[in-house]
Length: 227
Ligand code: 5RP
Image: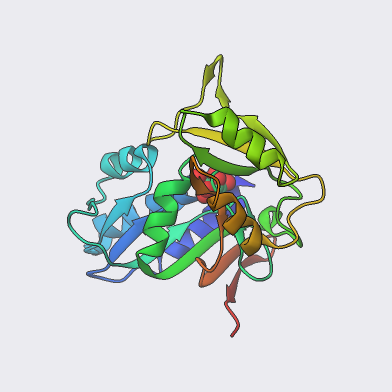
């Protein structure tokens, strides 16, 4: 599977153009995007800089020599490249497997062109069928959020890191929500989850992908949003 992640990561890095401000996603697929981007900076003198969506990506980018930006420098980005945990035919996604959903959603929202890079295992007919939906909540009263999420028909589990509660880069908790039959209306579910007091960010990403690069045995398939 990592070979498929590599081919889509490298293809996305080849889309970056001189002078662009980038959104740098998070995860194992994005790692390859960063690797190839760093290579282009060194060999071609490509001049790009990006806002990282996690401490992990920030550390990788620094080590690889990719110039970084923050939202203090700019609030408008040209190109955002990120992975996904699931994506459907309408380009709705579940993200947040790596815990970076809040910063990812902010950076995706600030970007003119959003390119999602996945191996073919991430493409699903219905969201929520292979992956639990991550929901970032404030630690205060997380059990209240847990209860309200249960009422929406899912089984939430508090994400752990070994024996300790997992903490996001924003010092929040994550409830991973399993939907027994998947999510029939992702946009409506996102709205219902966002309406719960204490929820910081829902891992449903609606309307935040413009192009998808899917890696499979025959290479990279490039899908563009219809309509
Ligand atoms: C991190 C994410 C990632 O994009 C998602 O988990 C995919 O990761 P990977 O490329 O490692 O499969 O949403 O919060």
